[in-house]
Amino acid sequence: MSDHTELESRIVEAIRHYREALALVEHLEREDAAAHQALTSMLLVLGRALQDEAAPSLKDSLFETGSAAVSRSDKAWAALSEATARLDAARLTVAALEQQLGYIPEVSTEAGDRA
Image (cartoon, rainbow, N blue to C red; front, side, top):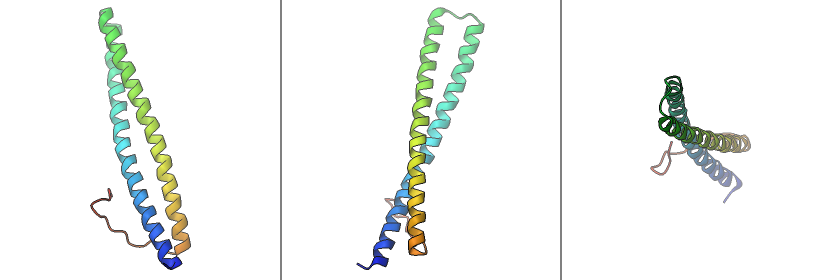
């Protein structure tokens, strides 16, 4: 296989990795937004319960639910941060290979691709 063909194959594979990383980031952004919305809603409910001097069992339940919402939000943020780093690394790989090759070859969006 010539160096040119090998480099073209590497950039095609790098683009596929980039597409996968981008799809993951997009999914995790939606998850992070949903987790943030759940946390915001939970804080509003908890605030009202505290102001209304709700029963202790209700407050405990709300605190547990709020804690779970915070945990979900933290996990979503951590996963998104990690996926964003992978996306950036994939972007840098594509850019470096493009610089070596001089162009980006056309890459089909096969059924296996998530673009």
